[in-house]
Image (cartoon, rainbow, N blue to C red; front, side, top):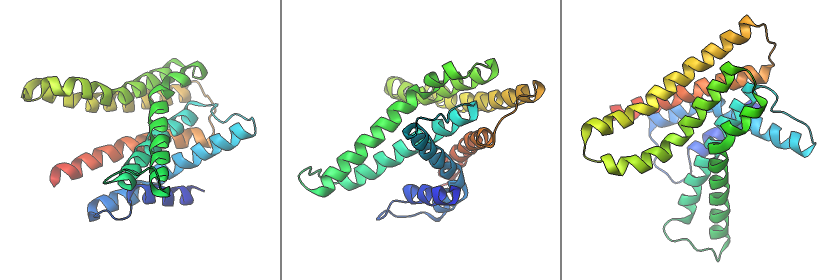
Length: 219
């Protein structure tokens, strides 16, 4: 299942008809299992909900969904804009498909903003609750940047400080995850495989963002 999810992740990251940079393609292939696992977890959530069963029982399960939803949302928005470019025409099947994919992307991104808060009632361990508070703050950073960026445009000092905030929060999130894992080990809490996969997926997603930034800066 994860192999199939990885193939879908590669396909979503490399839309047809777009010029492909070898470095970005290589990065997408290397990190495809990260998002492939998250996509499989989302499918399991849908199947379990359909059968009226729970899947989101452990913090790692929520982390899988927290990574999978924004990935699908951003990918759907990117594809929809390509379909609707240059002029959207909702009168034919291509326009309808583009609008439908765009709507899915908006819903996934919207749910991503509130997902950490939705997880808090089911996550009772203080260490893991800190993880989800930090995760929620990361998802709100783009909104913060859109509001503050135009005001600070052209002022290097404050602008650089705002640009450094995501990196600081990401490092704090990584540290919080490691502390939560240590807390689980100290209290001998038994966790399932999907919980550990969720932790690996979150860390992989953070590393992926760092690698993309490094590749972009070297261009």
